[in-house]
Length: 158
Image 1 (cartoon, one colour):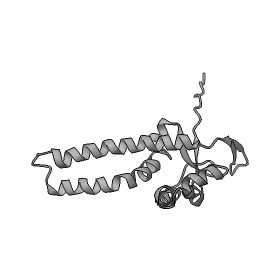
Image 2: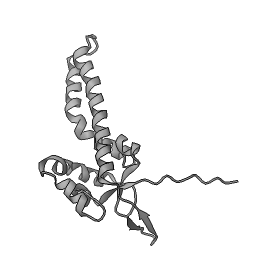
Image 3: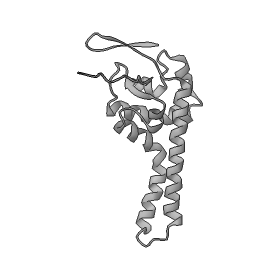
Image 4: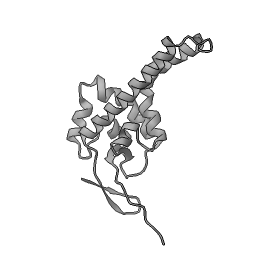
């Protein structure tokens, strides 16, 4: 459990997302990317429509290559810090002070994703296990962390 000190001096309790929740969200996102690959493969190879010409096929192939790289950046940018997997598991990316992530923070986080996941032999999970806010290297550089979202009841005004 961690606390956020807002710029107004208010202290808010915020719980970091567990490693298991982050991993499960990534698995859900990977499944969704796989489904998108299946649809694009059908459009590229299974479609004999005249309107799906060489230019459209080339675009679909480029999209297949870029999809796993752009998916987290696009969804977290336009989804208020959440991919579809994060939304299902009720976790999201926030800044250290608890605010919504800025585009520059998300871009920095995204740039470090290959280092955290593939190139560093597990430095991302190690950082998650050994930092107070359970941040991966990209989160540390970007000044963000992944937290559990709280479901607040809406106030009823009479």
